[in-house]
Image (cartoon, rainbow, N blue to C red; front, side, top):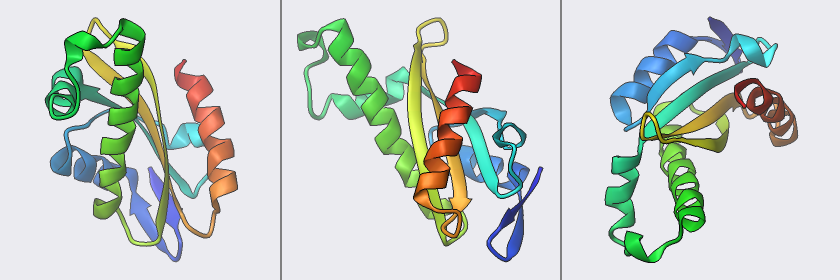
Length: 137
């Protein structure tokens, strides 16, 4: 899907490839159309829990954490790691990232990332994220 991004047009397929090539994330679904806007890129992403475990080993002993603490730590790490995507997307972009699920059957964390040009504004992007999160839950 083509998206108006500031004064240029961006193909969501190109951004999908950039995300998958330059990060540990896999694009589960292009949600750009689901944003119901022509100026928002949105993706449902997943990251393998083992990738997060390797990051976590540097800071925590996993066996000392309860299941709830582990869940919270995985979600936080996934969101933090997703912020690195910002360096690969077009300049002038703002991001909103929400991890929402630990899918134990696939052993990964699911996230939604919404990307907009800074002209859209943080408040509007948060509103759009709320709509996107309800689509995946």
